[in-house]
Image: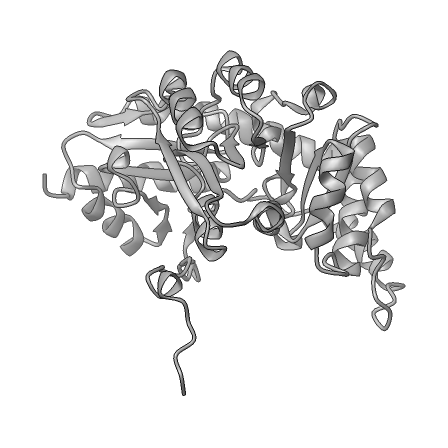
Length: 358
């Protein structure tokens, strides 16, 4: 058989999700809490009447209304739903892809910006953050002028660093480029900041979010809002019926009971504060501030690979980022879990730091 696979696809490494069976899972920025039993019963009763023999509402209009009303999106903005943020990124780039088109983001950041650009045979430019993981705005503006990107992705807060960038710097990017600027607010629930209120002021602004970090990761639902004319064009590449009926019904139900999700989010924020304090009290760690539901830390005199392996042997799974980017040398990232999970992680980490080699 002739080999039809593109060389640039062969050169990629597939996105790897490790098996977490039997582990305390603190590697994927998930909400660790489930719904109370009485809410689960109500949800199951709702699903009883789901018509699985019929295609779902192709535009998911009821769900869009619920998202707009409960998640603070301007009424004049258009909304597109996707199978997680990944499909939204793919839609945006498919709509603008072409010879010599450039995708830009900052580095380190969410790996799917670069990966999906590669899938679509687009050029990718990553602009390094400074040594404090903040936007290097002068470098960013220079690279925008040089490369003239079609799309710029800015994660806010950023993954994996956890910080919010300067609003003044982002505003400068928005007003000095005609690129589509996508503010990826996957962790907006934990940040208490958003660019959604600025959507009416910028035709080139898209705010992209997911419900995954709110506690609904299993539903795989992302949404983006922006200028109506722009999103109507992007919507043309969306595959029909991309949001199944179970996801539509379940997300509507969850947003009707958003107080449960908000209570969980507030608990995670309180536990983040405690976890940050405990990590900062440990010797040999540089702990970075976080506006998300995870914390980035750098080992100062131990090897991240060794510490990661010891944690995994003790059934505690976090993310080893030490080979992801030069700026993340010797870095690990931990998701904020339940109180018991966080305690287990801290005890195991403390032991690993004592027992690992330099």
